Length: 384
Image: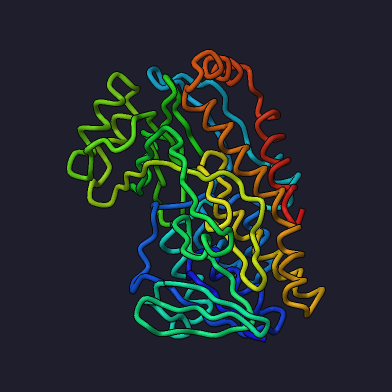
């Protein structure tokens, strides 16, 4: 049995690992000639780390994950502490730690684990056809590949998605812009073992540690779409948006490298009613593109792959296994997309009274409420 996997990102590589565990041959095709991840780093929460362990890649997380022991919210203008707590009770409850990691290094290590020479780069999908015997992927360079089934992990702008759904999908602008990148850890900005967030006026500044003595940082600002901003204006833009904010925020802005800072308008898509058409299945962002507000985008792709592997372990019937995968994932990914959207609205001040009420809640938060919500999300995954 052979699978065609479209995409060599987190979703595609984890899908290949899951199917390989079931003795299924995989051919992986990636559109770009060289992987250039969007976003400097990614939060892999405990459910995602469990998936990486299950897939045989747990050592990658051990190597790349930063020491995320505590969590704190600070008021943006004064840097006064709103709440701070240890994440140890969460780790004890769910049985695994969270691992913020460099996205580029994660993808590189996953590809190298599989074998870079076994991934075909520069293969952009053009169309998909299938019959009772299998699936054919045709690429823009005129080449084609055949397999018994296809896993389309070709991202938020998926080509295969229109084939599976029978329609084009419009992405929904979430109402805010995110700047992100990496800087050397500076404890004048935040402690080196803590996820620290500064919040005020519906804006957010965050730093979290990754391996290599670096902070992953991001800034969130509610803004209209399509403003004419780019890397050449990033420092001045952020200085303007965060004028009057506390000294640690100013120090962070001064430390960033505009050439390696990403500016992303955040989008999601409405949850789908189907992830599968015959022998073709959507996985990862192709099937459930979400905002990053609960840190579950990459985790959801890893969960997809674990469930996919479970379904093929239970049945050699391809279409039956893919229907099993769909049944196992539709409600879970819908919940994650909508939960992230709801959190986005609260965090980014779309209803000012709601956001102000959240700030007040943070001032009395012991950590129990936040960790309870995190635990519910984590334990809702396929590995508990």
